[in-house]
Amino acid sequence: MESAGKRVLIVDDDVELAALLRQALKDVGDNLEIQLARDADEALAKTSKRAFDLVVTDIKMAGLSGLQLVEILRQLDPTIKTIAMTAYSSAEVERQARALNVYRYIAKPFTIEEFRRIVREALAVEKPTPARPAGLSAAQRTAIEEHLMSLRASTQAHVAFLANARGRPVCVDSPSNELNIAGLCNALVTSNASLATEVGRVVGHGQPFTLSYHGGPDYSICSYGMGADHLLVTVFDREIRVGQVWYYMKDVASHIQAILESEERPAERTAAEEVAIEVKIEAEVLPQEAEPAEAALDLLEEAAVEAGRDFGGLSFAEAMEKGLLGEEFLQALGEG
Image (cartoon, rainbow, N blue to C red; front, top):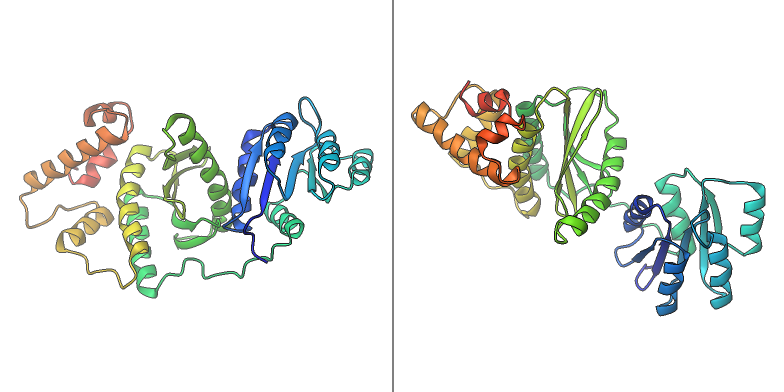
């Protein structure tokens, strides 16, 4: 059964969790309409204006509790289905939920896949038939893998990979199996999509933010959103400059985007593109056709323009001074 015309309302005062759950339900059906409410009052206001097929509510909230909300909803529309969530599970709370004829009572924490399955069952929506991870041709996959190899070599990263909107790896370049790539894909795609959209709504004039950074004790992670369908990710040592990684990711993302949008075999690279890739992989030589000094100045001038855009109007020198771009960056450009 298709999800067309189905409406779901998620009620939770934890805004971040609600956004994550909404993002998770995109896997249930493309035509599913999902709205959020911060509390029972906002939920009742929305349900009074239009009908919902399913209401998913947290039980413990300020003001009216989730069970009180369910009780009111049942009085207004006995046919509406409800799912109650709680981090404070008890036999008494479960008994109250069942007495209110709640469709499903689930205790936190629960897995995203479990949540999707319960919602599919509640809406009577069949699980979609798994498609090929990215629908890529062999030529496209090879071309993307080459760019990932270039990115990993240029940034001295442990892993560089491309994930799709379902949180699954499309292409991976990694010399080892030390990281759980599949788990990392799912975590980053689920969190980054909702966060980028929400931050863009608040301070980005409605445009989603494309770059996110996570710094940890052992690894740092840069993620670059490529539209709504793909996420480019680089995992690297914390000592590597974030600005250096960001510079190369933006360049590689543009090439990968072009490959993803192409229907036929990617066109042969121009001589200039071949030279650029060699420079990034080896980080040793400049194009032989140009005078070294002239080529270096051209690259630095281009990088200065990019730095001005990417670092909030900072000049190239200011970006260097603030540590956004380091000596390794200059060496990669051919100065070293």
